[in-house]
Image 1 (cartoon, rainbow, N blue to C red):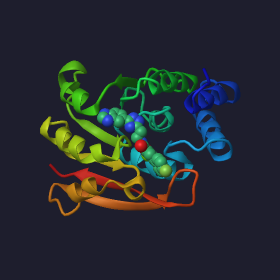
Image 2 (cartoon, protein in one colour):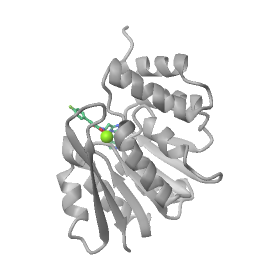
Image 3 (cartoon, rainbow, N blue to C red):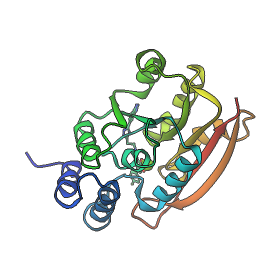
Length: 214
Ligand SMILES: O=C(NCCc1nnc(-c2ccc3[nH]cnc3c2)[nH]1)c1cc(-c2ccc(F)cc2)cc(O)c1O
Ligand SMILES: [Mg+2]
C-alpha cells in the first residue's frame, strides 16, 4: 500500500531533523512542504503570528483543535514554560500516530497530549477527565465550519475566563465566516485581524485573535 503524504512528511522529519530540536523539526516540515508536497500545516509565515500570540498568552494550559501532523503543536509546545501543557484534539485516526512521532522527535512529548476524537465530544469532558479549570490559549485549526460551534461550546462548558486568548487559522482561505460573525461585534470578545498568506502559497489568508472578556 502506498505511503500517505503525512507518512512521507514523517519520513522526512525522521531522516533530516535533529532529535530533540523543535526548530529543526519545523524547518524540515516547512522545507518539505514548500519544495515537495503542499500540506495544511500553519507554516512558517503564519507560524510567526502564532509564535507572537503564544508568547503574549504565555499559557499554562493550551488547547489546539486540529493536530494534523503536529506542526503547530511543536510550534506552540516549544514556547511553553516548564509546567505548562498543550492538549491537541485530532479527529482523523491516521494523523494521530504521525503527529505523536513528530512531537516525540521534537522532544516535546511530555508537554503535549493528543486527544483523538471530535472536538464537540471531547470539549465537554475536559474539566472532569483532564482536571482542567479554564484555558489560557486556544488555537483553532480544525474543520472551518466547526470553529463557531466549538467556540460556543467552550463558552458553555465554562472553559474560557476573562483574558482567554483564541487564535483562529484560515480566516480567509478556506475561510471561517460563522466564527468571524460570532466573535466580531460581540461584547464578549476583543478581536484583532492578522493578514498573511496561505501556508507555502501566495494566496491571501489571515488569522484572527479573539480575546474573551468574560
Ligand atoms: O482543513 C484544514 N484543516 C483541518 C484539518 C483537521 N485536522 N483535524 C481536524 C479536526 C479535528 C478535530 C475535530 N473535531 C471535529 N471536527 C474535527 C476536525 N481537522 C485546512 C485546510 C487548508 C486548505 C487550504 C487550501 C486548500 F486548497 C485546501 C485546504 C488549509 C489549512 O490551513 C487548514 O487548516
Ligand atoms: Mg490551518
